[in-house]
Length: 235
Ligand code: APR
Image (cartoon, rainbow, N blue to C red; front, top):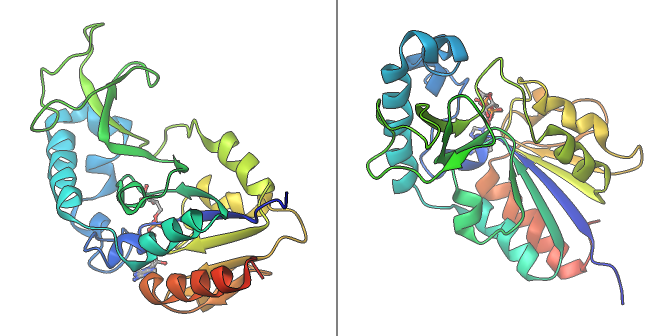
């Protein structure tokens, strides 16, 4: 039996932009109105946990209202067409899963999950209405969103590197490649594995050797996927 072509996809907030979810570093991006130091660091959590919880509770509601767009759907359809597709996402939303993708690794965690604030391995169902101060886990510690903050380790990084090293093609979508260690994933591809970045800023952002596809995810990803489906390979 022929081995199905293995696509590894690495996504950033740009893939969810056309679903109405803000990216981070644009001039009106999320970090513009909510400084990172106030809502997305262990120090912020220590200083003002309520502010942090309010920020994520609000974001969670926006994410719940959003719908997968043409790019999320195209990736899911490629998997349904028989390709092996692994998605590594920096996004904490669930739009890849809602589009139908089954193999999604959330490098920076998931906003729809809760965890203990003292042990990242202890995950809990999200309390109805979001996480509030006083929602504690069975070991008595306050619950927090199951997301990775700046300055914290990225527990799934090694698994992501392994996936990238196995790819027949690495497709990067909608990320400024500004955050480490996530951005360094690109250096784990085999030397002869093709890699492309779909992003309206791709010309400026693409590292050497990465094909720049200077367009939105909603336009660029379905076009690529349709070509691959017609050809039956990732060329
Ligand atoms: N289609 C594709 N890409 C787009 C679109 C679109 N419609 N709109 C914007 N973009 C691109 C921008 O050009 C930019 O390169 O999305 C990228 C968003 O970059 P950032 O705001 O830096 O977000 P991202 O790369 O996802 O950030 C990585 O940083 O703050 C942390 O944890 C957070 O996971 C996040 C990480």
